[in-house]
Length: 141
Image (tube, rainbow, N blue to C red):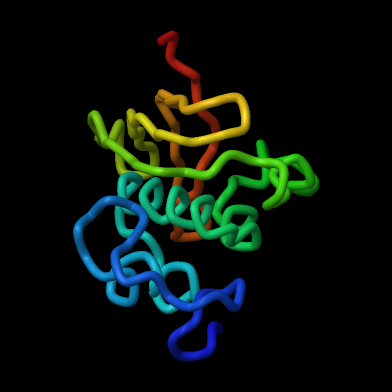
């Protein structure tokens, strides 16, 4: 659990949630990041995972990745080696059935090589009553 007023990484809570919902972080993705509630839909999980990437909450990213497809560690996603995430646009989301869903999104970033956009169609699955990220197909830009 995070101390009041801080993210799970120890940094002060941002005012606006990085996920682009327009809500305050403290009442949006923070409750998911600290384990206070599970994501209720694939889109809510996608938004919370994006916010976790933006804030460097690697534990949350690991915990919400399906064990069948997640890497053994997230060493390649170390905070100093990745891009700075600057915006999220959800293009669509839905359910295939009660335990499988998807989200299509575009995530903007800034990196030493310049600004860019990651477009992905992600798949999600319920395991032990919780939505988890399974994998994604990067869209051609």
